[in-house]
Amino acid sequence: MKYGIADYGMNVWDGGCFDIEERLLGLKQIGYEGTERLEGVSASDAVNKAALYRKLGMDFATVRGPDVQAGIQWTAAFRKDYVWTQVTGKDFDTFCRQVNRQIEICERWGIKVGLHNHLGSLVESQQQLEEFLRRCPKCGLIFDTAHLAAADGDCVEIARRYAKRVVAMHLKDWLVTNPEIGLAQWPKRGRFCELGAGNIGLDNIAVMKAMVAEGYDGWVFVEHDTHLRDPLQDLAHSRQYLKKAGF
Image (cartoon, rainbow, N blue to C red; front, side, top):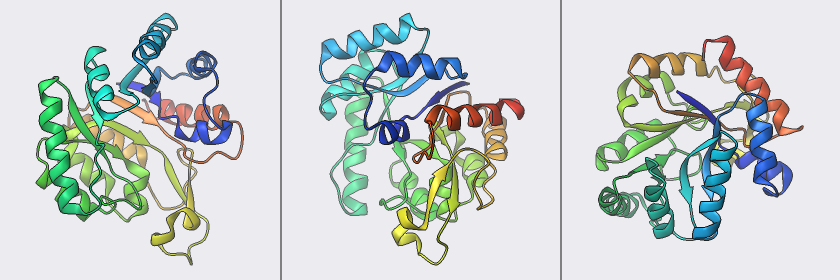
């Protein structure tokens, strides 16, 4: 497996990514091998950044361009495996129909589409996730453990049943800080945090072991949506947490 970062939380903390080389060097120093997304505003920008990743001995899993078509084509050009679902449907039926259309297009380019399960989205609960996977049988899963566990899903069960559909993993933990607030207002109910720092009983190591038992050997991205200190400290903690468990 490869271990990288989904760097959304780093961008929130810093206010953006101002120097991708500095970020990659910092992540490499604490034991990571890359980031999930290469962000390109133009074809030349994407090529220059891809060259920089290679120069630094780092890697990426997918590309996000200035529009959906560019992201698909550039991901294929760099011989990466998947793009995120990126459609406009606001109801479940429309969403599934549009994702299936995106899958058809991506198949022509030799890449997959992956759904990121997420609180507050059309695919939040385990029931919604399994129904989506049924309706979109060719869609992969960007399996986010904390988003599912925070919605009372069973991450180990999903790992055992759908590991073959997983195109990438997002690992983080969930800390409930205001239990009196319902899940409908999840940003006020709690926050995502470093591995092992949550309080909902999420066992990311058990999930990882289940994934390995099912033959998963892809990217594992640590993601902390919220940082209360220098992100590299939290990310280093999570990398060591995984290493102690043999990952």
